[in-house]
Length: 477
Image (tube, rainbow, N blue to C red):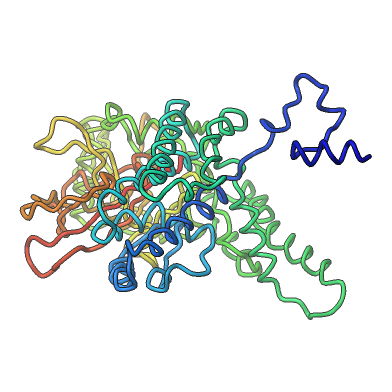
């Protein structure tokens, strides 16, 4: 026993007969949790380092908070209300994630010395790549190189004593991804979220509260499955039955959406290609398969669309289906016309990413990017837009009534950058606060939504040269 304890003391590990197995590697089999490693670890430490070295003052933090308060984030990101001005206390992992990916590149730009900001953005860029649900080995290699350069920079700027074992583990995340897949699949965010659900459950402060916890937890988590089990029983025209069920369920989140009649044969790889391959943009009709939970449970009644919107939709259909389609006022025997009836929607869900519109309760999630060809540019670019509303339209295609789902958007105008203002982070882009003239390209199949962005009005907004900063975020699919 004494010899075993001595070996354990010297080597920092305890012997097991399992170590004799050639294929068993306990070190390689240990997962590094990215939530703690990246966000609760290094992100938190760097704030302490900057403050302790007087690189950021309390006055800087107050000014940063003013700018941060104007940022409109997607619903999946946490807002930092007053936390920046208070030196970021009591921050959760979700808070630090928002700080890294959204807030810090913008608010640090005018306050942290440039060489320190450049080094910090290496870490931010690595996080942007690694947190995606889908990642290539090239992305893994690039992220690992960025983290290595970041750690070298920390040692050069602040001294070797500021390098922590946690930073060393950054350089093993590539092995973790290679062995276990994308970080998104096993990080601890989901566990922490469920801990929050359990914490919010009311108890009577008496014994056996464990049973109360589990009953409430199973009720809340199982309610969604309960409603979804009824979906196949109801046709789209009777979705009010599901809405009726919803009134009797106390859910943590909005209940799952109704059956989408174009969800058959959904292929996530094909869906991804529709939003990322610009060569296919002109061929996307809006009738391609979607997941059954894309729709909100309840959407607007069937109504007549405004004439201007109708003309845009007619032009769109003529491009993708052919100019044999005519205006409904010219409908006649043997002539195929475009219906002027539609259903408006305020929100839509695409692969667990919640898109909102300006007609929704909150504009968080109403700003997105679409790969779009500008008139004066040869190559496509991720063009930001503000989503006005979503709508469902049924059009006869090849003799079948086919459902289409669109977003109606307004495109931001390109900013001339007359003042020469450039952000250090290339993921921050300056655009005009005004929008382009509305035209047929304002009708966008939801399949082409490339991803969500955060936006903030920057500088004076009363002039014709008013600016909006668009913050690109990692694509969730």
